[in-house]
Length: 520
Image 1: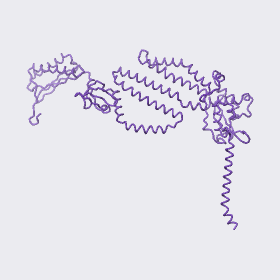
Image 2 (image 1 turned 60 degrees about the vertical axis):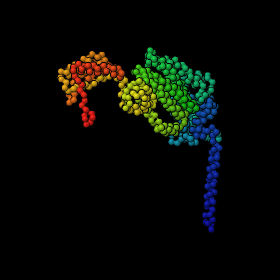
Image 3 (image 1 turned 120 degrees about the vertical axis):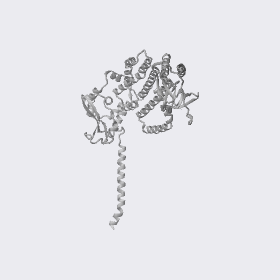
Image 4 (image 1 turned 120 degrees about the horizontal axis):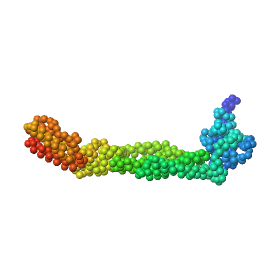
C-alpha cells in the first residue's frame, strides 16, 4: 500500500522539483540581469565598446572608468585618469585598430589564448623594436561584482607607448591649443591638420600637374589646354583629398570617424569627376585624331558612346559607395542582373543596330556622300544614324537599311576609287586579215597613249582570242578620274576613237550569230 502511494506521488514530486529548479534558474538569471554593469564592462567586448564610445564622445572622465588604475608605478601616478584615457586613445588610434567583434563576449573572457583566465588580449603593437601585448583584465569593482577593464599592466607602460606613437611637434601644438571639439568622431585639431597639410601641398601639386601637362601634350597643340585643366582640376583635387586622408589615418581615427571615413564619399565623388573629365578628354582627343585621318563623320558616334560610359561609371561608383556605407548590395546586383537580361532581350535588335553603327563608324567602309553598291542596293549614302543608314538609290528613292544588316552585307564603295577601269572587248569579223588586225592594235595603242586621262602604267591592248564568230581585242586601262560622270565622258571619247581606228583600217565589227532555235 505504501509503495502504491509512493508511486502515485512520484510524478507530483518530480513536477515540483522541476518547478523549483526552474524557479531557481529564473532567480539566478534575474540576479544576473540585475547585477549587470551599467557601463557594459561585463565582457571584454563590452568594455572596449564602452571605452571607444566614451572617447568618441570626448568624455575622458567616463573613458577613465574603463581603465584599471590600481598599483601603477610612480612614473604613471603623475598623470590624471583623464590624461591616461586620452593617451591610450592616441596609442590605439595610431598603432592598432581594435576589431571589437573579435573580442570575447563572454563574462569569463576567451579560453585557450595562452593567457590567464582573468586576462584577454586586445592586440599587439610595436614598442622599442619589438612587440608587446595590450591587455584587458577582469578586476573587482563594487562589492562582489567583477568587470573588465584595460589592464594596469598595459597602463603601466603607457608612457613608453605614448612616446613611441606621439604626434610630431606641430600636431602636438595643435593638440594642446585647439579647443577640444569633435565633429564626425574626429577631434578638431585633426581636422585642422588634415586641412592645413593639403593646403600647404597645393602649390607643389599644381606645379607637378602643370609640368605633366606640358610633357604629355605640347603647348602648341589644341589639346594642351584641356589636358592642363584636367590635371590641374579634378586630378589635383583627388591628390589633395588623398593627402588629407593619409594625414587623418596617420593621426588616428576613432570608431565613429572610421565608419564615416569607410564610406569614402568625397573620394568616390571626386573619382567620378576625374573619370568624367578623363572621358571628355579622351573623346575630344580621339575626335581630333579622326578628323586628321579624314574620318570626321565618326566623331558623331563618340558623344553617345562617352555618355553611356559615364552612366556606367556613375552606377559603378554608386554601388561601391552603398557597399562602403554598409548596404547589402548582393540583392541589388542580382536584381540588376535579372533586369539587365530582360532589357537586353527586349533591346536585342536595337542594340545590334547600335553595334552595327559602331562598326560602320570605326572601320568606316563608307561615309556620308559615298556612292556604292551595298549588298543588292546601289546608291548614295545620305545619313548614318545609330539605328539605320539612309541610301538614296538610282531611282531617287530613299532606302533605310538597319545598320546590323548593312554591316554584314558586302559593301563596294565606288567613291573610294582612286581611278576607274576602262576595259572594253572589241570583236572583229573573222575575215579580217592579219595586217588589218595589226593596224587596229597599233591605232588603239596610240589612242590610249595620246589621251591625257588614261594612266599609262599598265595600259594595254591585246589580241586575246580567235573565235569561230570573231577575233577579240581586249583593252585594259585606268582612267584618272574618281566620279562616275567624268568616267562616262572619258569612256565615250575613247569608244569613239576606237570606232574611228576600226573604220580607218577598213575593218568591220563582228555581229553575233543568232541561234534560230533559242533566239539568242
